Length: 320
Image (cartoon, rainbow, N blue to C red; front, side, top):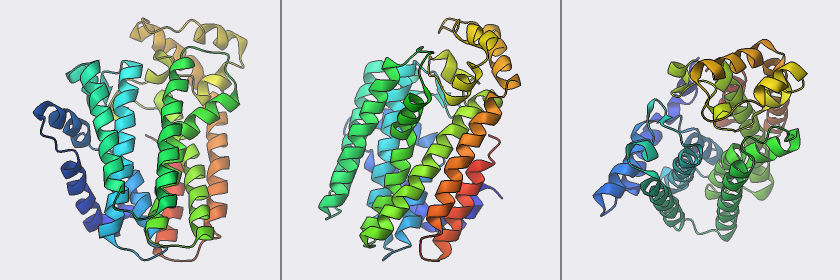
């Protein structure tokens, strides 16, 4: 079953969110409006809004309240992608030119800042101090994660703890908070929204690890960007860390630099794929998914719970 089929019962509400996303990034500046729309129109999984809506099903579900949370979190994610593409000097995102490639770095940075600001503005409709504290702390952590990613570029000797902390900030936190804020906006009790947060965190960690594996095992067409792009940009992911345990592969990995030819980087990718690094990475992902499913069992039974379970299992068996 395809991912979107698992939550097809949310389609009408997701259509509302899609319209609200486009409305949210309107600007008096034509250039800012075009640049903001550019990435949104390239699509995306919209997994964060989906988690907001599913978490909202554990409380008093009101799309007119939840849509603001869902749009705000998707905008934060979108803004971080715009900034990431500047940091990584990336040309493609979801098979389309990045904002920095279509315009330039300055336009991309201001576009990202604008989208961040709009997300905060949208959240003001939620009258809950705790929700605002959670969101502001998350944005701080996401920004620290971006800085850490710059600092750690081509740092091949980093350890597993550094990697896990980085993907927590890069991906898992925003998914966890999507779950938690959706639940808070629906008025669920603290015990429940903390458990939903933990579920989102574990799923988010597994989601990013799987993405990092797919960067080596997927094709450019499937990924919407060149395979092995993370390594070429100096981002050291879990398969690279495990592959480095082999001394001969380590020597080749440590030769990687941003000016390498496609043929040269493909040779390194092949070495990583033929090692046990992919299998080891997927085992770590599976551990996080097992934890996520265990937490989910503690939540009240409803349709959303089954869908969350299906999504978690889907993440574990993604091919691309």
